[in-house]
Image (cartoon, rainbow, N blue to C red):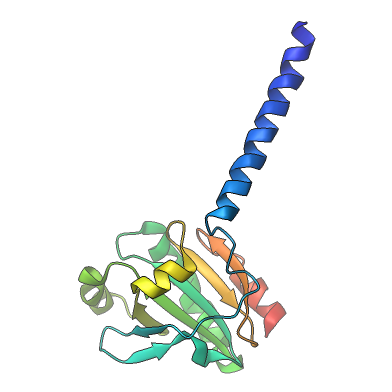
Length: 163
């Protein structure tokens, strides 16, 4: 009887993990993958409008972040390097900030060479980031091909495959 307990517990744990995975999918965890980027309009801190649907023909990283988020700040070091290396080959980064009250001060201290915009309800509802940072990689056809939670360390490999 005692020999049956470990396999039984493993089976219960496996079932629980499958259930959690299904529930995450139901709540938007990956619902945007293989869908086109919508025509959502966002504003830069200076008030310029940027439409996410206007970047067809480029490989685009849409990154949700906040100024208070240490992994987001760490990720920007990587993003700056990759952006400078690939921007002339059709790569763009759109950094979507989720805490606009601190954004202008942050940008005074940290120069970011790519597009920075402020999140709005439409973008947050569509993309439904599950934490910060959350990134979405978009191919040249305007299709979201990957969602990445946390620091996107494999970004360079992924964009090389799309450029």
